[in-house]
Length: 314
Image (cartoon, rainbow, N blue to C red; front, side, top):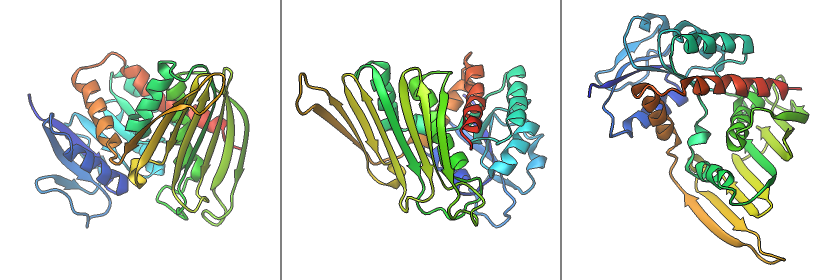
């Protein structure tokens, strides 16, 4: 089998995480052809071509381009490349829904992969939560609460506020967990406390309704510590997740209800390794190599999340 060729545009924090994920893949021979970034002083692996201007990579043949630039630029680059290249792009690709629809349509028309980088779907603990829901282990779902907050972000390269930065992940997560296209926004509240001199949202709550399931989502930069908490309650039991492996140990617990009352039977998992970036990349490579027919469904994910995110804005 020939080498699977990858190009990387944007080599900041996310670009470096993508590179580390590539290095962890052993069963597929991957060749990093180029890395493009405006910073000419970055260190890149030996043998990899460095290109400072992303526009100059258009004629370089690769199987996949990973775009990990700030949000203001990802949509512009994706528009240029979505007709001719398979793309894995840092979420949410763009905050401009009209532009994202154009990018998605181009990819669909030319049978190219357009994968938005929502790596939480590939988190080991959250994949177990998904299985718990799909197998009806905790019965009919009553409610779900998610907090995803970065407690130390006074500024970042995106400067998009906590709804787009953190909330987008959680919105994508509930779309995946509950596998429903119709999600209603019941109410929304946001604050501009400190972030970027109070110009951008740094704390917010959104109530959703998915059929009869109530979902509360909290996004923010004002928790003063990094937080990820997920709580789901059903007619037969509950499932909780505390933290993400990137911040330390992730604890998942699932408790089955005792009748008529009593302490539930609880099973606990612990995860210390964040393998979501590698797992997501393997998934994308498999889509490309095996020419999976569900590529349009994958391509539409980013657009559907942005549509719901826009409805969640004040």
